[in-house]
Image 1 (cartoon, rainbow, N blue to C red):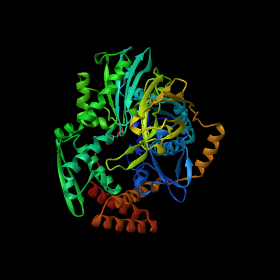
Image 2: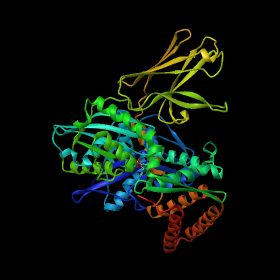
Image 3: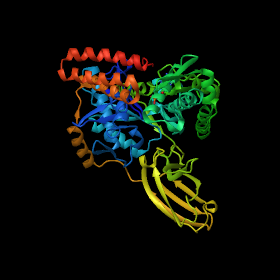
Image 4: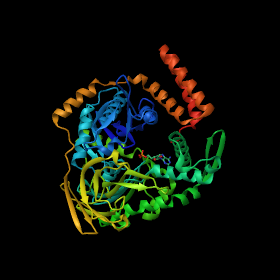
Length: 569
Ligand code: AMP
């Protein structure tokens, strides 16, 4: 049996082609979305999915998320005292999905179609293959995510020579792709996007709106939120955002030291506040159309993908941009996995669709470290300044101007990074260029930093000091991130030694992690109550009576659902 897998940055899904249709496979918790998160325990056992996501806050040094962003780089993530490659962590997610599919199908699963972003380069694709291998899967083929979305909608059966646009707005990234079906091959003709734009930004703007409109009255200040406080506000904003996807208004409420503040947000108010974000969605669409030399009217279909396209404001924007309604019959967060299963089904009948990428784009953002001076004068270093954004069509050359931090500085060190995080420590260091400066007041000192990146992955960094026109250059060759055969073998051994937690206990682990997260987020009486439940549930687990455990779990889950508000889809 070949399965189809959407290995996403935030969530992953697995689907199978069965009884003539694509079917999504639920995980041990009965959900089709498995958060792409991994967490390690003292005893060497691994948690994957919701349980791991719940531990990101309570066990940050043992848990990881969003490692897809590092695929194909030499980045190592240190977790519970060991270093992991991004492909090893992805392998753990794939392994959990494989186990779910085997439980669902009642048979072994050994082959998979795995989706990758269209802008992934060769190294990133190889790393994804390695992740599959490490999880014990033969990767039948990698499929471009927008092509998968098109397959889910049956567009491969459309008129020959038609063009489509896939609009994918996920949790943290935005990707636009233009596809062309030509002689039975699906070509990705253009890709564009914004790496720092997604559903999370709409959550942030609701948090800011709440603080401005109601939170100040109970002493909340945007710049002075504690970690747990910010997490509670974000969870409430996420709920409000989802309610606004189906209702005309929603109430945002938050309690602090026994005082509750409430803010009623209408859909119109949400749209007004979201206007700058909606405007930012427009630019990549226009760029992709320009790159593919197409007008909106040339597109046969527009397909919406990614959970955040459920927001009516996004849907309306797309309708306005193209002058017609987009396709969104398939759940937007499931379309890519469905498409991967369609391809798996075609593959099983030797009729797989060929897909190719025609554009060459820069697969990562490239930039330098800078500092930021706050209004109060405090200096924060380690901030990322992107120079060439991910998805830029290459060859490309871009420059930005920077200034030294202090007066009469004799040199600056430009530290160069690749990656997507605002904190440079989470990005991959590529090199350092030392730039000597004539001694001047900082106001008279400007350095023009130019990055030129070509198709062979060669990055040239050039710094021009405007004061004396002196230039410094550095050439950086991208190190291949693919693992050697020996490294794969060693990694397989190490992963095999990790104890994957038994499936029948996965639900208990998820509940414990949920309780731990709530304990962190809540305060006062609710926190005390959660603390007592943690102790009581531990006692039940210690008695090892499966019926008692199942009963306690059910009752407690219901109480927690009431506390958090029933999950919305
Ligand atoms: P994805 O990366 O495709 O799983 O998308 C995740 C994003 O979709 C998150 O930012 C979610 O908040 C958002 N999302 C999921 N469901 C909804 C909904 N019903 N309304 C608004 N946003 C949603």
